Image (cartoon, rainbow, N blue to C red; front, side, top):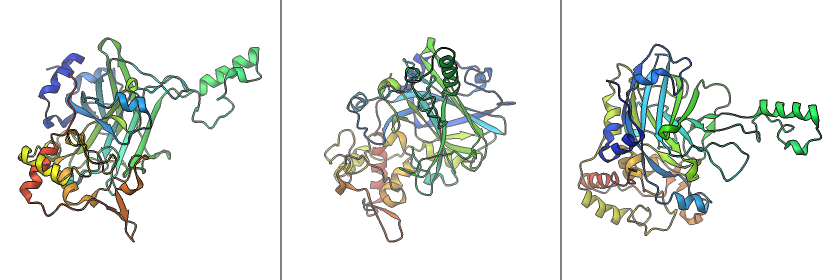
Length: 402
């Protein structure tokens, strides 16, 4: 049965959302050639509702942006997938009342946008990459598209001559018209980039033509809704399905809220099932909701974690002393949280705010160049206590916008 969801209906689903939404089934189609957001193939998609939670990878040196996003709520987005056997398309649509397009060379205007992140491998779902940027030895491939109008400076061609205001040229009449036509032709009208990353500061744009992908964005004014698509090969050097399934996450930026870079909304890991796939292990990890004693878990977290980490209701620790846990329940798997408690050096997050005190370094480096977390292993806790802490931390997430 065809399923049509209005923006209001999408948002109304927030109250009943659970981690069960983190499984998306890719639908087989004849061909993805020429597929875009408004294509008729969209009617074949089996949409799944996924929550994207506010993420502040770093705190920007932007007082206004920080204030706007201080109490940002989560949003419900729709995620679907299509495949023709050669390629896979991840489709995201999300509510946004304002259409923000970057169409000037300015520093106070930011575009709406989205990203799709693939874990390079999900062979071991218990050890998926750090959400958002990957982690050492656990790379991710990231595809980003932002809403751009024609932008001339910089135009990406290393062409300085056509990056000047026409009034600052010596051209007049026909020569000026010719200059403006050339500048128009060289302007950048689409922002789409692919990256590979294995942790903070390692995000590297792929520029050697070794990645084959395309993206699309489309805004529906009547519904206040963006649609975005990333299409890439089913398998390449950067990501491949494990037992027929990908671990994928999605992110969206809202230009009106001055979001950019690490300031965005980000989902947890999603299992994208190719036709005929049945990777129960990955699906279990991305949907696991630990059945522990949340009340006891809170008490244990306040005793063992709150002296360094901060989260809503526990902000006693100095800022930047350790990674914030504000939305860890919406963006990290239970397995990841457990691993971080028992083996903090397994995934080290080296990036912290540049305003942090140097005494608050999150890691040291041993003689072999390995990063060692300054957080000690809490492996002396009882298994039940670990379970209770994880159950509590899974509740740490922002309220969903209604």
